[in-house]
Amino acid sequence: MPIYSYKCDSCGHAMDALQKMSDAALTDCPACGKPALSKQLTAAGFQLKGSGWYATDFKGGAAASAGGGTAAAASSAPAPACGASCACH
Image 1: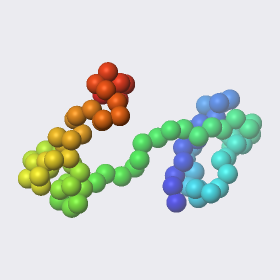
Image 2: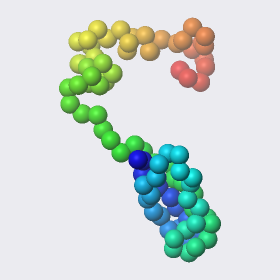
Image 3: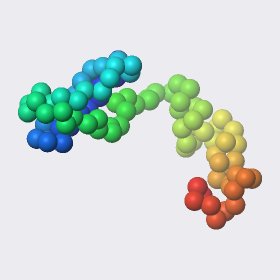
């Protein structure tokens, strides 16, 4: 189950809650009792380490060049649907 971060817009109380993805968002602040909790955007809490599929197939650097390096060359060129002046390049 994911851990969601909440912050009260009224009193500033911050908290984390372990919830199912299908659970409704919390609204009532446990500190002040007002319905002013809002979900905060946070980074994922894991890292991919080691020499597994991530390092050999998707991570840049020496490991990617040994595996062929064609994906890195293709990603630097503009996509055919957009030109070099689009916002994605």
